[in-house]
Length: 141
Image 1 (cartoon, rainbow, N blue to C red):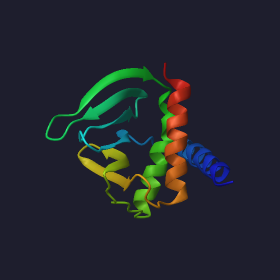
Image 2: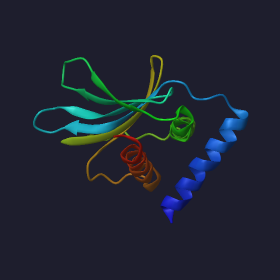
Image 3: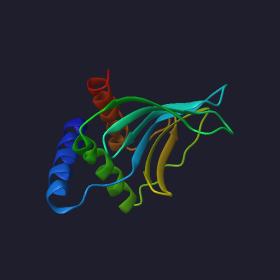
């Protein structure tokens, strides 16, 4: 039920946004990391539709590797959802041995939600990450 509500919300936001708001420019980072090695990894999705595998070791620069291209407008519902959460001031700043995160980047500005694996988080955030990963599995080689 929650998944269907989130999907409908994403579709409505995407449709409404396409007609009345300019596209959200920037990038979205989604992934997890920590643990024994401290390695963080995931995906970097740019508003132009380019998708990269992303990783970073503590104290080192981010590493990216191109993995594919998706239609830019297909990412806008994800970007818009993050903008909406930022407007609502949704804040998740948990940490654990292994941390999951999603981050919206606008130039130098960062809006980040993060939580320890196993933490109790809003269902809408958990469903959002599932939907993003499912989207990536369907659209990347």
